Length: 159
Image 1: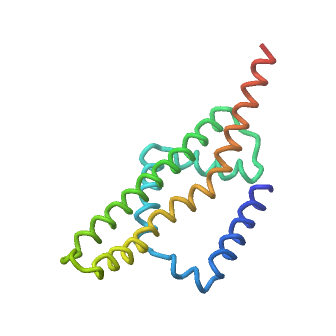
Image 2: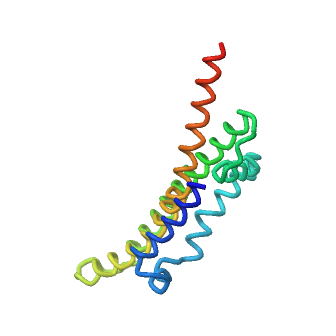
């Protein structure tokens, strides 16, 4: 329940900060979004963690009756998505930066610097998507970690 309130609050805050739905269009880039999201799905599918990631979302919305190993798998799946999104967002940023610098033919004029700055503002969108993924998944990661620590404490009390 609290996670749903968090998500709604974050969506409201981002829309407020971005100037509403109309200005949000400036930040949408389908290719960049796919460049970050497709590797996340592929790594989840390739490692067999897609189900664990889905369980992590269910855990966030209140499903609590699962064995400890399910929580551990879900925690690792969420952590893996966060890392892969950061790696591919940074990779896309570097590719875009190198491409924009390479496209400038004459570095002797001040206009060349202007074109590089304009291109860099576009390539920074590739850093936005991993940050949004982190904003969404970081509380989920902390909730899973908190549950795992609580289970460890309970196991120690029993012994």
